[in-house]
Length: 355
Image (cartoon, rainbow, N blue to C red; front, side):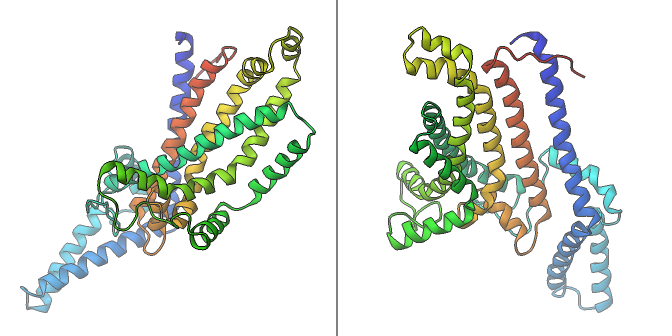
């Protein structure tokens, strides 16, 4: 890469890092200013004190000594959780702990190995979400590119109008509703696919058999994500390539007698690659948040389902902050990758200026 591009790209990386810090600060402010953080931490302190009282009653018979021991422990817990300070004084420490992955321990949720460390729980769920969303995005991208470029050469046909209706329906149908419908039809009515979960009960023995079982259980959630996004993907790529197909260099290529596949791939699709890649990468990053409902419906143990479990029932502040950090971090990484790919896909792009 040209060295002249490194400085502006570095500036954009620092800008995206600033976005990451801003999101964490805003989250910490919202949790603290509303009193939500204090309520969660006070509840945690209360639970620890109740457990301590039960154990101390076996050794301390004097009620005054028992209360004194509990009060001393209470003051220690308040200081360790930062409750002896105002909520805004805890913001720098919270942001630093998240950035250094010192995320503490979850209150109720555990990893498959029984660990309560938030970092272990999140890193355990992350590959499951990446597998689900990456598979759905790749399938959607392949169908969208192939069908969209092909449709751009058949504007106004019946198939073109059908794709336009399909895109509108696909965009308007809620993903969660589509997922429930597919479960009712394909899982319960026709009994073709498992209704949810990641593995059969009991799971098969052997790594390869478990992998096949995982793929089998991923069919329904992947199908839901693909059906909800393939229509808009086809139509958007069709619109992009249609505009490029009407430019002069495409007409010149056809006038030279080039085969239509060569015209589509070299003179249309190559020029449309930057905006297409932009939509795919940002769509993948944005779909991480939308996976919450899909993973909950299909009981897919990923970050989306973990986010739901962290909010539902007894909220877990540490997990909420950690997952928000991970979602934002993945978006920042996607944006940074996109900046580099834009220069590689379109040599005409040259950043100017900088900080």
